Image 1 (tube, helix red, strand yellow):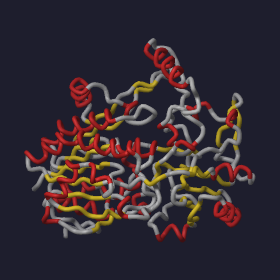
Image 2: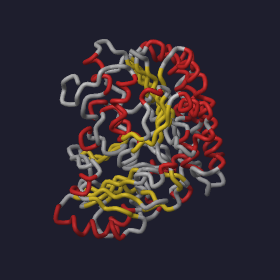
Image 3: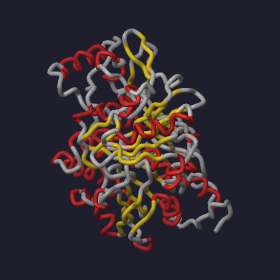
Image 4: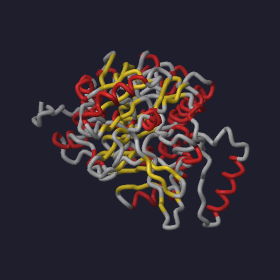
Length: 463
């Protein structure tokens, strides 16, 4: 049985490999393949496909979040593994080899997963409203072991305006500590996500980010080589240029289909009374339509919004393996260069206070503007510094520094790639398993093959 390290280097593409000699060496030793991803090409959906070998219609992760119809709430970035349907790769492996040991460092839906070691971002939410960086681990003693050796998990460098290589460096060092004891080690390396969305995938900053993440991975890849660990490096998606934010919720509101309620002068999405609203997720948006009689009108309206490429009803979703009960009655796919905002207010002075902060759990959609300190605000850095001083003094503060305008975003993803050179890629150090192209649904079985475990048939028996 071989030990295997699986690196999810988010945003890595064949084009960027030119700037990553350490990652490129994996392919030089073994092989490189085109990786065909799923719709939506976003983290939670693709990772769930990698780990189960199934499409979103089976595992149920139709995006980074969705409208929970039974709760009447939109939630993104939930963490419980029970949300993911189907048998995970570690469960499959243990049916062949009981006691198979797995470490998960920051792959999503980690909490409650049946892995032997788990590390996942988890802030401390203080009673006074403050948020402090931290992580959740299993077993619990691993928390103090990692933080005493590496420092607190750098949450504010993991996402937000100050996101940087520091979070990936922490993840790499944590992975180096766990890999010797594991048979399968999973590590999520997020760094390329940041400057490729901020500045675009063909920018000088994107090249610099590729070089940075390659340098950060060097010691881990050296450990794997020295200890005979097979390396599988892959990406969930490529990031394409972005130039056009699309405000589908505002179009639905102007048509009288989306409702809001007001508190303290701020408007909040009202999913309970809205006839239609969208959960925006990069270049894909799930549109939830309460009354089937409204579907033709909503479909026509959405198709007419500039920047919308496809409008998929439930029958059309079946073609993409996205026909799950959690999906919207309609799923929108953006044009090349376009992406969906979650914005539903019509005037910025009515926006909720969380819109100007990094609030991934309160916003009813994904917000890439969280990667920016508002470029239009000349005092933004001064205000951010004042808020940090309040935090250090233990005072309550609001980090209201995020722009309300999506014009600054230069990179996006979610639609299926239009050019394989800018799509996801797979690298493997074991030449005996070489092939030219893989589907995302094949990754689970490739992991098992690399571990030299016989692959159980999906029906339940051992093949």
